[in-house]
Amino acid sequence: MTAASRVALVTGASRGIGRACALALAGPGVFVGVNYRHRADEAQAVLSEIRELGGDGVLLPADVAQPAAVREAIELLVAEAGRLDILVNNAGLVRDGLVMRMSDDDWHNVIETDLSGPFYCIRAALRPMLRQRWGRIISLGSVVGVRGNTGQANYAAAKAGLAGLTKSVAREVAGRNITVNVVAPGFIETEMTEAMPQAAREAMLGSVPMGRPGSAAEVAALVAFLAGDGAGYITGQVIMIDGGLAM
Image (tube, rainbow, N blue to C red; front, side):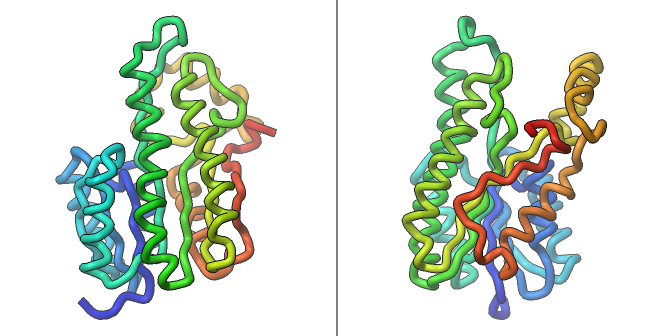
């Protein structure tokens, strides 16, 4: 490949917000690592779209909850592209249930993927970013991490912890021209929300002042801005994109 002007890694990039982020970052001279866990066909389709937009990339199958797999994926990306400039921590899962009925596995699986996963990715990504003295780390949080939600104690705890992790890392690396931020979506139209019962959708929309769900493309546009040069003085922030839900 020709030398890339920017190299990005997007976790959980095979669909939804991750896919939208990968495509928003893509373009001539941009090399995107497309991480996925199970959906190889969908990840390949994303990589094809990146190439149609003039960029290039590589598929990086890995479970972000496994630190060795994360380290190997990032090492492969850096070996392939020569650097790593942008990390988008998007991979996540939900295992909803009331606290009194929540199993240990449902608690630990969500914490491991949604909080430990970003930690493993950040830790591995910082090595090349510190050498370069430039980097952008953006993690996908949630409005739930700020306001809580019935039946999502595990998910809310993980996303709230992600905010603390982000602020701490931002302080550690600010002097190296590396910014670290959280984008916290509200009710976004994805495959996951499309599967919600109609009554639950209507109840959620009723609490959104703008009266509509957001789109994955709107979230990705904010991520792409934070990944660029124009956001170089923004760090340690949790930025809501929720139609006013949390205000």
